[in-house]
Length: 200
Picture 1: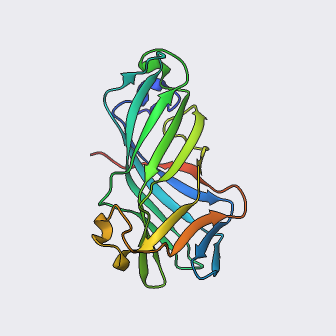
Picture 2 (picture 1 turned 90 degrees about the horizontal axis):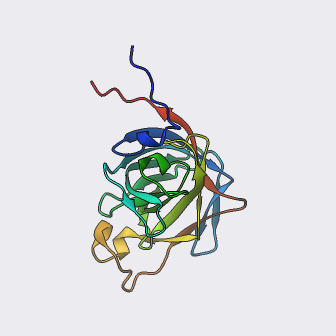
């Protein structure tokens, strides 16, 4: 019988991969450019993250390691909202230990991700050109089950059909934002549980 790793051990951070369940804390609201709003209260999802095998040491002595979001999925059964990761853009992040040291100082840590997403809603696809920045402070386990990642700023989305380059677009050109994501309270992506994926 294989013993589950101690997720509070900083040495589990390098070269690891995990899948977790997610839920939205607060009411997620889609704001359309024509003034319409759509509230989504039942948003749940999944995420997969991989960490680098190597870390660097910052000038102040703290360790920092790159992390890559491999998958993002959210859905609302009530509204039909579907949020996926844009495979055409890198979804990267950094985990930074709070104290100076080597790998043993990778926890506790602050984590920040830049995410590029595709929203499917009412037969149209929308994407963000500026990253949705999500962060969590002072996580003590990896994956950080029980932690809520909060967005730094509201994020606007464009209709894919109006962007030159489609999913690969990096500039809006003449396209106008068609919707934004916001919330009526603190909105965050809450890590609810780890999902075991067999490796054999």
